[in-house]
Amino acid sequence: MKHRNIVGIILTLISFQKVTAQIYPKSDPKNKEGWVINTEVSDEFNSDEIDENRWYIVGKFKDGKPFYKHPDKPNKKVWTGRAPSQFSGRNYRLQDGMLHLETRWEPDFPFIEEIRIPVFGEPLPYENITTACFIGRKYFKYGYIEIRSKAADAEVTSGFWSMGKNLEFDFFEMYGDGRKKNKEHLDSELWWSIRDWKKLRGKPSYTERKNLGFRGADDFHVYGIDWSKDGIKYYVDGKLFSSVTAAQATEWALKNRKIEKGYDGYVAVNSISIWLDNEIFPWHGIPKSEEELTLNGTEEEKRNGRMDFSIDYVRVWQKK
Image (cartoon, rainbow, N blue to C red; front, side, top):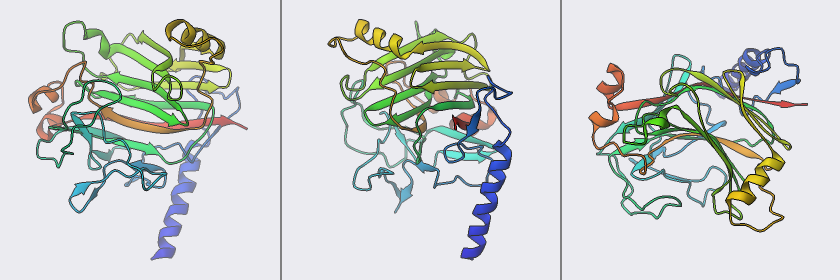
């Protein structure tokens, strides 16, 4: 049996490498830059099961309750989600060659009872809503990061981001449906940030909010980030959407943050691991019922009381 399992893993890796061998960033289809796929952190989501050597699923169940152990530090708890939503290890499925992260109306879930003080926002109890979170187990530094995805069409964020030492690099936190007054623009807004957890306590040392020209929850789009020591170029559907140099990021930080001169605002210089998740942003709105959560859902989503953040693939290329 062990021999059969090992053979299966080897065949899966060979198949993955064949699939990705000749695939290049949408912005560089002829690979003029010489990109090489990093198969350890990329995923096509074409398997029947999640590769848990590649991803840590937050909130997996044990003895009838979700548990939250840090993937790298077993004695440390990992984040449980932004209240009132809580991460559940059951809120995902692989279907049609895609990963679907589910936001569910689930009032009978065994929620954490204590109210925890969040880093951002007001303290709230965990209740009613469960979400999903995947954390990449492997780290990498610099490269071209690409995702093809469709945001959940609800009052919830669909997040593609990363964490490293003293660093949070948010590729996007896409709000699916801005329903409240003055929030209507959010569902077509791309918000990305570099956050400094050493000197700014998680506030951005650089951030941008730009209109995409479409709703992120209406259809699949490709988002690509060319990340190097010199700066970041952001691509949407293969076209350059925005860019910032390391010097410009520092200039932004000095202008917008109360911090001493000499501060280097380009903190995106450490290795990162990828996060995929859904979160409730209470300051933008909280679904108050299953009907509110699934208002824009398909018949299947309404029937199952869930909304999907759908991910076709996550790919990372680096240079030799």
